[in-house]
Amino acid sequence: MFLDQTAQRARRDTWYRLTRERIYDMVNPDGTGKIPQFDPPYREPVWILPALYTGSQEHIDLANRMVHKLFDMTKVNLESRWEQSGRDFGIFQSNALAHCLHRFEPLLTEAAREVMEWHARLVFKTYRGSAAIDFKFHGANDNMPMMAAKGLICGGEALGDAQAVRHGLWQLHQFRRLLSRSAWASEFNSSTYSAVTLTAVAKLATYSHDPAIRRLALDIEHRLWAEVLLHYHPGTRHQAGPQSRAYCIDYAGHNHALQLVLWMAFGEDATGRDLIRSYFHPDGTEVIHFEGCHAQSIAEFCEMIDTDLHVPAELAGLIAERRYPALLRGRAEAMSRFDGQAAD
Image 1 (tube, rainbow, N blue to C red):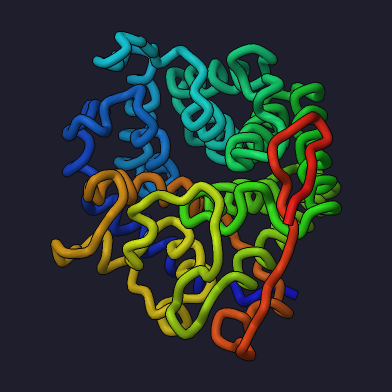
Image 2 (image 1 turned 120 degrees about the horizontal axis):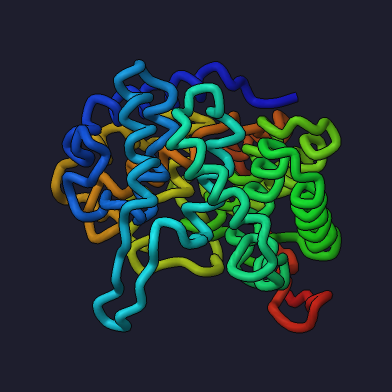
């Protein structure tokens, strides 16, 4: 039914091992950042946690210290003077911590558990939380409501909050409803955000305790794989056609988040991409997100790949085989009223 997952798990293990080998280039032993991007409460020290919690006791202890540091830190936006505490909701941090609570709970210290439970409960809120009305599938920014659904379901299952799980399940049904009337997600074929959405729903298909949620998440993941692979152009090893919410850097033709997901699923031989070389042994010329800070991409990708990817076997051949000329056409939802309006 699925493309073989043994090889992708080996690639994930390699990515995590190399991350752990370099962790003290990014983080101090006390859990603070060695480089500014890893100072809590930024996203990076949360994103990188799966690589540490799957390592040795030394790395698990470091991860727990990094989580505990969130409560001690504040960041300030120097332009707006806006301040965020490590106790505040963050769409990236809080949902990722809810997932880590669900996934790694037996490994947590009491101090780390307190932080993760705090953020999971922030996720449940309808104001400044993942249950807020803005984090729904409404024709734009699909990655954020999918992260919200992940946080609501994982956090709800971890803390026994049935209402949070129901809200997350409602989110999934809303996205499946959108895909029933549109060929593509609203944030379609995006080099950055399609990868976030696809891997977030893959986590629910992999880790949710509820078989019905896993089935629904798997159904959505299959549709997203169809979107990604139908847009893939084997000759140039790029996504073809328009994409929603891309960055200028994505058009350089170098590696980015969606290339990571394809490499995870299919490997270097099929994709022609060596993500290990690009991020762990860079040549200094390849264009990389985060203004060339490889450590930030390494951390983000640790969070993304903390799941099996369920590539439907009937779609897998698209990574290498297409008949040309090929015409692909579909509808995507544009942000409008609650039910949205689909457009060519």
